[in-house]
Each structure stands twice: as structure tokens, then as C-alpha cells.
Image 1: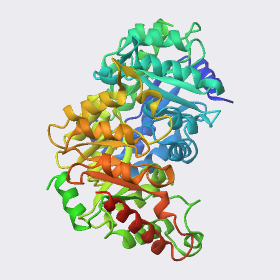
Image 2: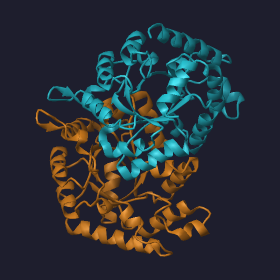
Image 3: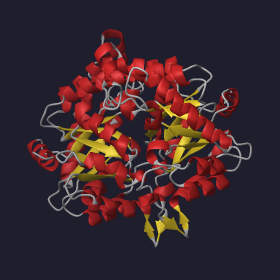
Image 4: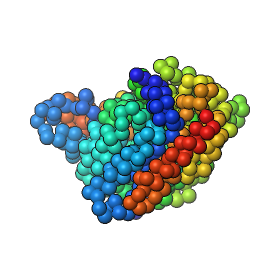
Length: 270
Length: 270
């Protein structure tokens, strides 16, 4: 089963385009976990997964939040990936990029060592840095196209013959999609750009869309512009706004309430 | 002591601009290590460091080669950083990039958890992704400008008003250097671009230059165009061509011979 099939299956099973971001952060996590648990980060992730696994199509793990914990952070990442039910998409968000010889090691790391279904990669080095990822034909490589942050335009809006760089990247993603395993990352905070990018990519290339929630992206526009005609192949991410809804013993139930409400809001516009 | 002072001190002490890249790779390492040693990767790194520490200004650790080993790879990275003599510059080459909230975690990871003197970062997200690194005023952030690979030009050569993107990035690096802690990454495989970039950056911003050795960059042009008028602030990296010179018990001595020869060749042109 290739990535797009796996995604379609779980989107239909859970009737959801929602992806929950598991960005562990001691400063934001419930304090009682650090007093009571021997493995507070893993217990936190397990509780969030248990309480949301019927509401999501994917979990996204941003590697920065794990790397900062030291070598144990990668053990946590490994355990967390293994804990996620096998029919749910696992996205390792590392925005990796390097020359071919080294990109091959990152691809091996994310897809083999850590068993991701999908990854995020940065396109600045061109096809050399992307190709080793695309050799994993049943996986998906989401390439940064238009990022969700406020300075995204510093370089992504630089225009050549009136075409901004993010659109040049989008056209390349379409070119690179010969195995049907490319995706794009586009921030919900830029709905106009999202509409243009979906127009270029067409009906079959998935878009990973962060920026809903804490970053302020609009749900209606995200769904309208990000999905295809079937209302699919958009993966809409929310992290902090869901997993840190509650600060107390009932944090997982509170996260579930927020996740369910966002899932339903997304579905309203599909 | 800030980064540029630390760099100047070791460059003068060892009379060297050479940086050895510690890219551990089981396929290329001497076979006997895996038969005899309990910790072959660490033993390899220790031997290479022992045999080259008076010949270099820096060691560069490309994180991909460690990440692929699983959680133990980060223990290896940590031990390797700790083993490097304190007066030698440690560069953690991860080409990290993310939105501000997350870039802060990467900066904390690389500079605090793993104690780097310098890091590499990818500029595609603009200043938001760079700023959290620059808050570490005594460290150095080398920003990818012109990469060494053959498809570097896919996006880096996209021209706006006749100015290619890599030059736009170079000008931004100069703008972002208000704490004097920015650097640029420029591949030795593009000597023309290196000359232009050094011209824009001036006399005080260090350039990290991979691409000598296995990738085929020219040493004379690298030194001529990469250094400032004092023949300094260029860090010239070689990895595979040095550390995998030998395949047998005497691999560290053989690596030393290659490193010394490259160090001397570099100095001939300074």
C-alpha cells in the first residue's frame, strides 16, 4: 500500500483530515506528570494518542522537540512512533536537507531507523537533496513550499519573471512527482498562496497544512483551498492548541474535546 | 570569548584553516573496528581526533550520519563532542530550519544540549527561523548560501532583477550580523560564487567551505576567494577524503597524512 492509499483509508475510516502535532514541551505540559511519572513525555504522548486516535488521520512529530531532550529524546520518538496505531499516518517533521550523499542518510534515518510514513524536507538544495527521499516510493516527502511563519516571504516571495519562488518550488514538486510520492507543505496562514498552490498541484498531490490554531490560520479557507474536489488530500495540523488545552489530570480529555471540535469544523467545510 | 575569537586563536595556534568532517559511515570504515571494538564508531572518531587535533581549526559533525544510527547515534555525537579538545571549534552541521517557536528548540538543542560552537542553518524560512540561533551571541550560525552540490542552482540561481537568490541570501546574512555571529556556507565547487560572496560579506564574516576532496573543489581558488586579506575566516572542510584514506589498522595515521597534506596545500595559497 502506498502513502496516498494509506492516507485515503484512514481519512475515510476516521472521517478526518486532522493531524495532531505531538510537540512535547516541558514548559507547557501538565505539571503533575513530572511529579508522578517516571517517563512523563511518553506518558503524555500515550494519553494524547489514546484520547485522539479515532479523530485523526495522522500524527506529526516535530523532531526539534525530541532532539532537544538529548539522546533520550530519540528513544522517546521511537517509542512514540511504535505506539501510534499502524493504520494512522506518522509524519516525521524534520525539514531535513543536505547534499545527495548525506540526504541518503537522512532518508534512511527517517524512513527506516524511525519508520516514518512521511517526512518534511527543505528544497533549498534542489533535486539532489530531495531525490534520496523519493527513492522510498511507498512513503511521502512533503517539500516546504510556503511556510506558515511571518517571514516566509523573505525568500519565498522573491520574484523571477513575476513568479515568486514558492511557485517555482511548487512547479518543481509537480515535476518531481513521477512516483506519486511528493507532497507540499503550505501554511494555513497564507490562504491566497494555498489556493494558488493547490491549483498548480492538481487533484492528487497531498498538502500538509500547519498554521491552524496557535498560529491563527482560518479553517474555512484552509479546507476550501487546501483539499481537492473530493475534499481530501489535505492534512491539517494543529499541535499546541490541541495538546495543551488542559493543564491538569484531565488534560487528555480536554485535548480530545478540542481535537473533536476542530475535526468537526474542518468537516463542515469539506 | 566569542566564536570569531575562538576561531582566530585555534587557526593561529595550529596554523590551519582545515576542518575535518567526522561523518561516520559503517560502509566506509575499517572493517576490523567492527570485529574488535565494543564501540567502533566512537573508537574511530577518537582515533581520527587523536591523530589530527594539531592539524585542524575545527571538527564538523554532520548530524545525518549520527541520527541514522538510532538513539545511540546521539550518545555517540555527545561523546564525540566531549572528546574534542576545548580550544578546537565544534560545528554541528544539521542545516536546521523551522518556524520561530521550533527553531528555538533546535538552537537550544545544538548550542546547549549538544554544546556546539557553531551550527549550520537553512535560510528558506527567512529571519524567523534564524533569529533564535542568533540569540546565542558567542556562538556562530553558518547560513546556507551557495551549497556544494550539482543541483544547487535549482533555486539558488533563480534571478530577481538579475540578482540570483544566493546573493540575496548573502546580503541578508550581512544584515543579520549585528551581533557579529553569522557565517555563510559556500561550496568550494563554486569558486566564482565564492568570490562574489566573500566580496559581499567583507573581512569579518566567516565562511564554512565544504566541497574539497570527494566533491572535487579546487584548493587554490577556495583559499584565494574564501579567505579575507589576512588569509583567515575561511573554514575549509574535508570529510570522506581524509577520514577514509585507510581501511586497515593504521587508518588514523593514513588520515593524518592526508589531513597534513591538505593543511599544507591550503597554507601554500594563504
